[in-house]
Image 1 (cartoon, rainbow, N blue to C red):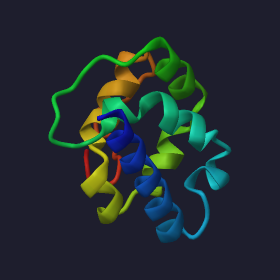
Image 2 (cartoon, rainbow, N blue to C red):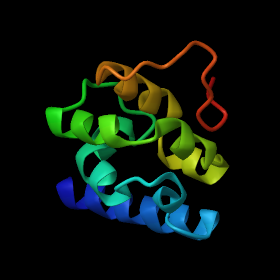
Image 3 (cartoon, helix red, strand yellow):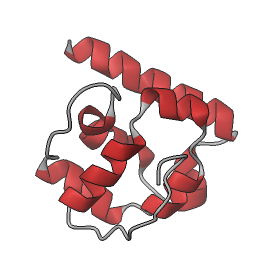
Length: 107
């Protein structure tokens, strides 16, 4: 199962990079690989239930520019990563998310 999740995260990274044209984090000044490594299990796949993130994930989330990352999300990425879970994890990590915040198509 761990190998499958790793493969899925690599695929998501490659797809995101090819869609955005560069690593999505480059424009947002984010350690994208660290974020994926620590948080992938909490935001994908979209159909799994929400679970509270680890301290390591929260450390990465607190360093990330979530609004910038969310502005780069498109429908292909949304099929792999749950934007609702992204917002849930962000809030669980103590990072404020205002009502009406948009991440991809999720508001």
